[in-house]
Length: 451
Image 1 (cartoon, rainbow, N blue to C red):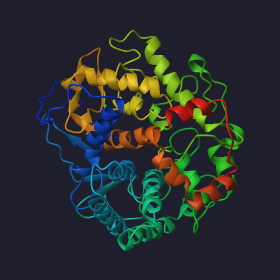
Image 2: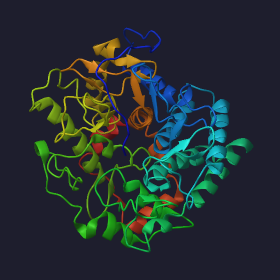
Image 3: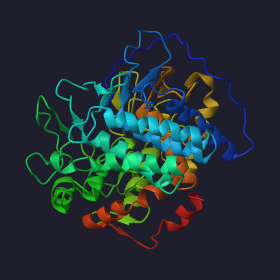
Image 4: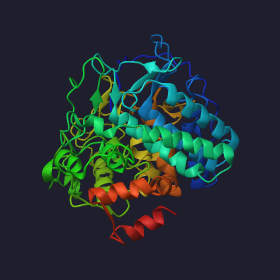
């Protein structure tokens, strides 16, 4: 999951952010405000023709933003889940939410697809592919799986509603059934591939091997009612015939799974978010790991790295932590303990609320106390550096739109309940050898956190 962009350190701010409250009556009121503000990226900030999430929104004038019409399919999956949060919490009306979702479903049905799989980027006004790179001009299985994860939550939410809502669920079900996961095996190999291009075929040559953010593609592939993949793809491809397991224990937090390119210290924290805003890791286990341990220990090791602060960056601590892919002083970068550039991305800690509720709340309050210099119309800016006193008034959908859904999973488990209620998902998980245990050692703390 990447963003193609450049950075400059100086800026002229033209963000017209509304005045924000100085204080809140309680933590629940604070969380309401944070969810609503960040969700607004997908609501007011959406691309007009599609209703989907723009790849980025900039509020500076260093150079003209010439890609305002570019839609991100993966970021839109998070935004679609955020629409459900907004309906459930009364940020928007149910009727207007359904209207927006119909618009989205109709648009996705006529937009470019490649064996039912959308590209990474779409040109909003036309629905045509906007190449992410020269050879990345076709189907993007990972981004499309993230998108479908959000859409299936919508299908479950409205499946027993009124006539208009049931029609929406039926549209989504059709899109789901048209995704040909089996086509993305590259000549029947026992592994899924990220990309296929009508012009370059398989030249991107990116097999989905774990561990990173791509687990959801295998879960959906195994669950597909029309174009499913065999379990061997998961075990031999994603799990590398068992090679996915790891003994790494950064800050005494066992990672359990080998993080690609970051085996010793852990990868960027979005790996603990993107597959899990619908897929519920609580008590989810297979022969390789307990996935609650996987995501919680990843988040905790990221937190502890910032608290220990081995590079001595100014401002790091218990109320200022979180390393993930974001804008940066030195350009877009996948920040993680092994690539710590002194840049904090608020989405890292905020989207980890289900796993690290106390630490994430401390970070939220710490970020808020930083003041208006890191805050704008759609909430916290994408990233900031306390050491360099650097930020840009810019947002990325893949960072901004995941915040409201993950906070909601901490508060009520809404998206987890919806996605896991899909009968196909339950069958797919069973096919891959996943089990749902009774209780484990984290259950009591989790029950208190997910109240």
